[in-house]
Length: 134
Image (tube, one colour):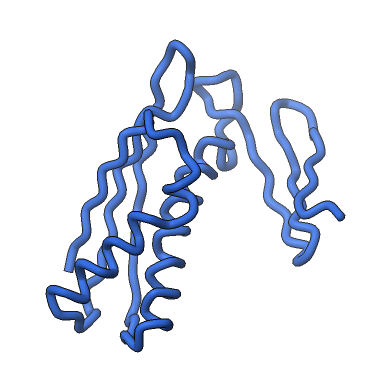
């Protein structure tokens, strides 16, 4: 059974369907790569996926270890490079203020986040910079 399916819409846009939930997203090529930049690009989704995976893993870690997870706000900056064109770096900032964790708990949460499935799946050539703010 398919998990995700995609259809070309024209003008470098793709409609993608998550089969189980019925959720759809559309992508567009970025302006600097012949697109209109009106939607997430595929590389934007990679960057967002990395950020979202880290936050998800923090939630799972907290649930499994009896820690209260009051919340997290995050942002990611994607750095593109050429020859070949690809994601060369991600600058990630996680704002974890409001979580009442001691130093040991913070380090364990950070370690869990840095070892999320997406982090383990992307090329080690991508330079990842992560800032945890408390």
